[in-house]
Image (tube, rainbow, N blue to C red; front, side, top):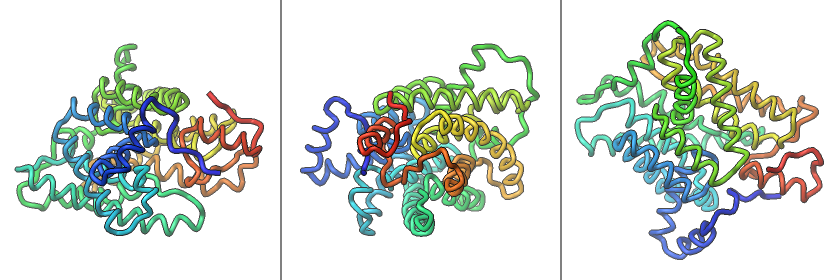
Length: 356
């Protein structure tokens, strides 16, 4: 069984077929698909919308993200990575995230230095992806965003001793303790929740959060619902735990939960139990994020990146043999939740699935 990478979307198949006939257009599609895989689909049009969603908040971060994706994709081709994985953008989303992070967290004196540093990050991500893929394949567990996280743990602190580079104000916001919790209004809660979605793209902008939701909806209705649930649950959890209000408003405690909802609903065939499990795991990322902020502080690492989501999901998948009511879906068979459910239902592998 091999689930398709994305739901049907007008003109998407036609574009994929057309671009495949031209090497330049094919490479462009590979890069955009890599960007789209941040939201776990290879819908080219969704990828373009996500690039725009980043651009309206930070043109520099967008340049860094797209360039890192391009370099990472080219590096994957040069290294001989299976073309199917490259076409789906599997080797592009980690470089994209690393590029976005560097573009947001670091101020560069000139564009060439930015392109050099983000290009290096893109190459590192591909190499780490290949290595971790070999390691985790022994347990049939995907690498997720671990290559990006490892790359940033090394490259972000390095900027502190490199000439001409400075950390940005946002990085300082992520590091300071934050203001004490106060009464929340409904408008502030909505803003925090949308920023939690936008922070998947390293942006604390509600409009970016909305555009990300639209991009997700272009590929999956289930993902659309899951993303909303993830950011709402994590925001409520952060508020209930008394997290500093200004940090919660930035959305930094929401995006890992959003990513967990994306992944758990792919790694386990959706039923009531597995979906409840996904929500619980999403809430747990808030605790892990809080702990990592303290652990990383002495190392001059100002963000926890996607470590809470990646570690949480890997641990969940490693323990799958004890989950008697769950059906595990290997990453090689991942698509969007709708395609996975339909494929398994057609193969007669489950009678308790949810198909939107």
